[in-house]
Length: 352
Ligand SMILES: C[S@@+](CC[C@H](N)C(=O)[O-])C[C@H]1O[C@@H](n2cnc3c(N)ncnc32)[C@H](O)[C@@H]1O
Image (cartoon, rainbow, N blue to C red):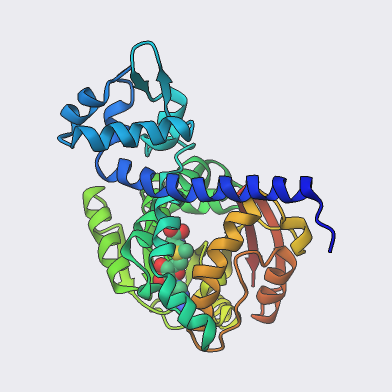
């Protein structure tokens, strides 16, 4: 065995970065939960004592947290004053939920996945099954907060206009189902934008449906948007103009069955919109930063979730357009195209 010393050192350096990143993710969640980033946003340079006073936290812990944040290059440290600053650019990523650059949901969701590691190890040894509802609740909140900025930036202005004739239909008054809606981020965004249309979100996870109802009430959308606990192959209603699946078809055990059920619930000229994680066709196309994030989530969440349901296809979060086309075709859709895309999502249109 000959060891390439340079290669070895390079890999140690890489893994050291990953060890540090794991800790940074945990500390970022603490910062989020304690309101530390929000207190620093726009506040200029702060000493640990000032941040602790602003947030009602323990100064010594805050000093260490800030030092770790500086070492991670999340905040800037001024050695002459001993103060720490969260720049406006970093605040957009860590402290401003309305910013399209917000990433806090990703950090929250990923630390949540690690919290059920024991269950995952047991599942890997047995049948691979871990249902969505068996995860830590931070995953549900993290998912909403991760996806919401992208939906806000794209759904109404780019994705719906990319679907054939759909914007006009929604403006005129259409009937929409959002299947696997989770906390209903996408349902609420659409309902706000298209006041003449009616929206119903379905999800098999009761706690998520409860939260979606709360968020709709906060947005004063009661009446125009409703949420029901329902499985993707058994939701009530028919004659929908649009049925959407946002980042969830691949989580389902029987995506073909779910798409087939949706086809029957659509009007004859209705549209199925599939928003799925961006992916190339082959593993080698996805060996990059985004593929890494999605394969991680797919291994810990999406694939075990799919395996926990009937059929248990295990499509995975990096299925890619052609596998998704095959799912839609098997479900009886005759037309299928990539309507648009972002660096994080494929937006696919299927018509009966
Ligand atoms: C990754 S989350 C996406 C949630 C939401 N669409 C969003 O974009 O924020 C996947 C969701 O699919 C739901 N789900 C998984 N399998 C389902 C099924 N067979 N029927 C209905 N919902 C399902 C889960 O409960 C979860 O809320």
